[in-house]
Length: 226
Picture 1 (cartoon, helix red, strand yellow):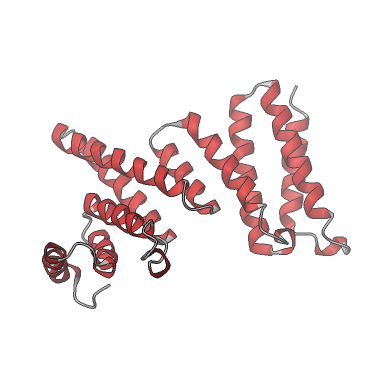
Picture 2 (picture 1 turned 135 degrees about the vertical axis):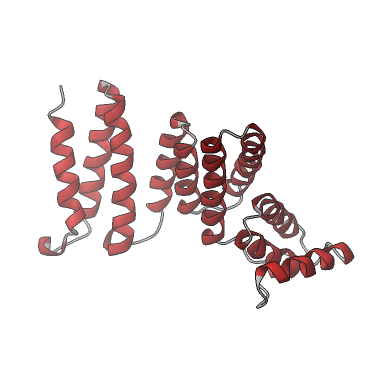
């Protein structure tokens, strides 16, 4: 990103792209400048352009993957714009923000098919939850939960255990909200398997992560539900 202030960098980047739209570093810089300036539609456009470049065999190796912090910032900012528009009651602003949300949804779909990382599904879950698309949140969290467990040796990595357990607790909360016997059974099975998998990785029981005790507490609560 240019060291200039974003407001000053933006017109220079726009002019550079008028001259040559195939220079990926300029698009990369424009992405972060647009995020700083809250120009989210243009930031989404930059993301899509960078992904297009990565599909070209002669360019893919040189172009970095879109960063997690960038996508999180884009999602959070776009949702804030939508919420502010709804709070204002401005129909034109709401329509504009809704179009941006649709563009962002398409970008996230595209990202999810090209980036096999747990964080993309965590972001998707946050996105869908804030749009009250509750039917999609569980599926997002389950995908995150499964991907987190594909990392070799995660059971003995304290930070990774926290991430896995946090995803499991979020999934369990949704199952409890559903309240059906089938959901309760799924919750018990998931938590039981997770407890056993983590415990089996420790010879010394004193070294078992504290998160296991939290899971056992949740399991007891689930098991007592009639």
